[in-house]
Image (cartoon, rainbow over all chains, first blue to last red; front, side, top):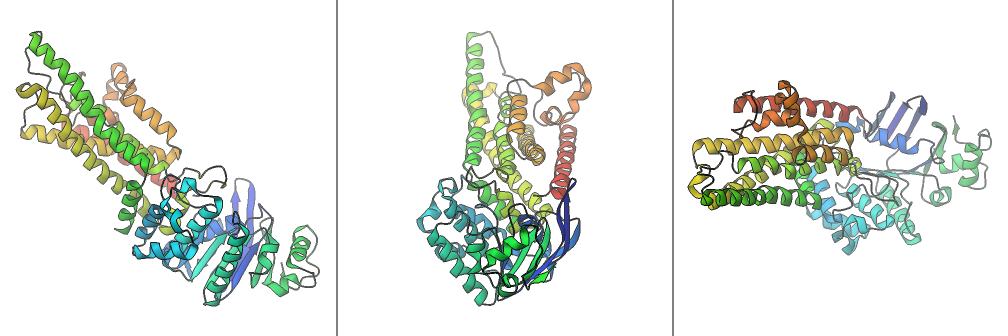
Length: 242
Length: 254
């Protein structure tokens, strides 16, 4: 369960986020949609304690992220890129991440298998393709077998086969009662994966609800998204217009 | 404990840390070999009756601290290296903070890991360097007394504090280039801090100049500072820089 309540952030004179509120519930994949620069990554970074908001709270399972004693066992995060130093091997990266939360070494082999990193895990991260880097980041996020997964643009850099794989993986994850929150600017990739949708534009929530609610009378989620973000009103969607 | 173990894993799996250790292990012994050979020929030629300088071996250890500097810098700068052109700048610090969100604990663990690694490096290098000096100069070299053991402890403290100073400065810059250039140049090519002692006696209380008193006995300076006091002055400097760096790290968006 993720609860973001009334989060606002300024950077210098720029208002990055204004009164952002939404929840991501267990058992569902929640898509956090918006054009580039809308504030998706900033919101996720605040949720993960990386950036600070001037106002509002972001809670994971009822607690601020920074107060989780062994966070990897509650939240797995996949932000842009691999999150690994390029001169380490994939396995060496996973080893220090596992050690930081006192997780057993055996988990490393398990997550390498789950994400299909294979022999690449023994190579330096600097030699990875973008897609392999994403798989490594996901492997690190899964080390603690967390109840909550937070992913920023998870399909970026993945090949078609990888995109198909991660969709299935995230759906299964949610089906087992876990919470999945993912951000994306690609509507087409998402419509088949998400159960709930939160649309953000210019730092404000434009709409939120189930996929059907937000799509409303539009033909597709993509149409609804452009209607919501092109500056026109929220006419035509049955999601909670904000 | 998990945090320190994790930081030690980070250090041990970074090639630049091993390069730093190699530099640390090699520089002082090699320079000691060269300078002791020169001293030895002077003694044999009768132009120098010995004993060799009370600081032979230790001067080289002061110089060899570059290995500790590199280690201290890369321990922090590696968190901020952007990934390459394709990915738009994720850095390891994101993973570090999502795995261990307490920034204070992360920094303490990192400082602890750097201190452990550099203390072992300094100990090993001191033994090798003094063995090289003794092997060449024999009885003309520094005697193996309790005082010498105390000076080796001084070398270890000096290396550890210098590495932590390097880490602390890198917390501000995030890139390793400036701290590496400034600290290595000051240690090797032009010792600005030493030149400053020619201008003002106060410069004797700069961190490196004060810290050297822990093991260098014939420092060319009219200001006398006892070894323990020198160590205390250096420690106060490093504490100040680390606390200031920690405050910046705590407040900054990652």
